[in-house]
Length: 332
Ligand code: P6P
Image (cartoon, rainbow, N blue to C red; front, side, top):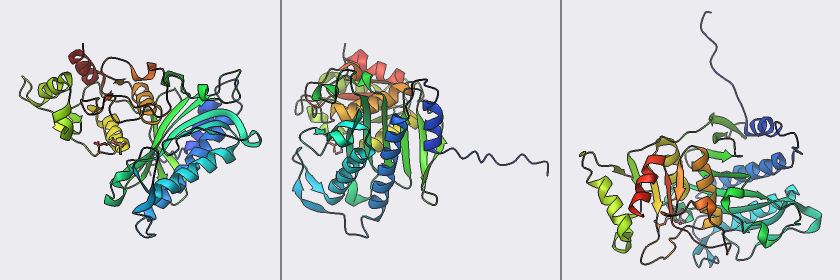
């Protein structure tokens, strides 16, 4: 048999993170254990999302979250799973969830050195339509002299240790960065492991796709209108393609892999846009920058923003470096 053996290098998320973390001389294994809790949560949520229709989990839960949005049963379930799993890990001190008005301060018995900000099931308005949705998370380490306070999570995204998302679609794709580039893993339901399928994701320097909700065009500020005109009616006669799913995880995942630009700008209706800074803006900006792209409000690097409220919103333009720089030029 002179054929080369098939490349069956099965690297799991757990072993990959362990190997990356072990390079840090001061690694205690705490972050690895926290990431294990996060991936277990994603596996659990994936199972429930996949079976939602069968278990009649789809539909309203009859309550609404602090954003005033109708809560779906899966939202509540995913949030409960994530909070319980993170608390049980014993590695967290403060949790911030899109579904909870106040931060969650972990009791002493279960307290650790990390703070996790997350949207347990982003894009949930798409659940009933079977459109891809996802969990988005970011991890801060408590400041040295802190046991875990609000100030530990009101920090610029540039201080995150980890950022990632898990997209629930035809398969469960977990994309994560610990500050050494971006890696993508696909859940093998047969063995219950996330397998490394997209090592070292790099976003193309320029793409051919733009992803905005143009239903808001009436309210767009002039720089956004002019930017969109420039790629829809370009002098080279080659307009960009429009792709908009309306689920941030799905739109960002496509942008990471194919390049181009995703934008949810501020407009005359929403002065800071719609997306939340801590658990949507920061994690996605962290990942895109780690993959070689940029993430801006139009005038400011998203990761540099100092937050004042855990649920504050921010305008978002992110994606290929050249495309984001084009947008910034229209905001000068
Ligand atoms: P619109 C989903 O509700 C979400 O928070 C993001 O996942 C998504 O990018 C955005 O809102 C979609 O908002 O106004 O275009 O429906």
